[in-house]
Image 1 (cartoon, rainbow, N blue to C red):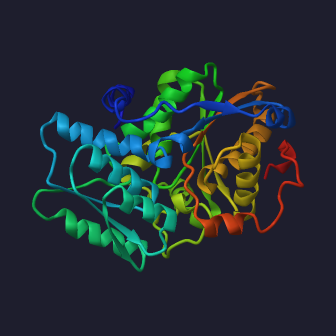
Image 2: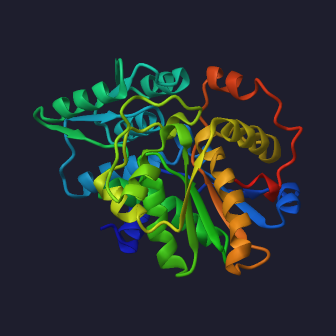
Length: 336
């Protein structure tokens, strides 16, 4: 199980390779919701997402142990691909990425720009099977997108950093795909403040984590999900992440309309390029703030939301802005 000491060590190892991203807020959103909402802008991280933290930590650990391979392989829908490609270039190790053919074009282009070879397959499952075969080749190391202690510890540095930048947080919220960010955030939060509530969000159309939490064992999706939150379209969470995610205080499934709604509003209010995958987390925040009234929580809470990425394809942007959601002002009345 990943510990806070693992995250602190990861923070020290990756410090030369990543940015300390800023925390931003919107006074207008705060006035509408009646709470203080802070946003950790990992969309401004190098490669445009938090994923660089885990990838750099994985390779930094291998270098520390003098075990850097001659080749790296990874499977990803986009942000992890870019992160591994960039990290491979930093550590001077060739990279091959295995992905489903529906990978975002902008993420595919960036992956190749960073020097990685990109191999695409009809489905995510086929890509996952291909990377497993490739990982058996000599002098090859597979960097998984979430299901590894090095990755979890690396991703947890985003929350650790955010909680030091902004004190007295009552609630920490993150999106959940494979669970690397959420599980790392849970570990960081528990060490920071025992009663700090951690909540997760996932697309209703790709709700493997929610099903797993309800069933008490890992559930895999039977087909590739279709969702605006492509960064959370993983077929299943991992055994490492699941054990930690079981500790989450609340977990919410978000429909596609609400994902588009919050993507529009966060881009408008924060003036940042924000992915649907992390924008959907605001619906979970609204749901939890509305529910907290019945639990005797503080009337005015301080909430940290991790904006996990900012890489969006033109096609996704077009879909998101097909309807005007800005005519409905955010409020706790939107809770579901």
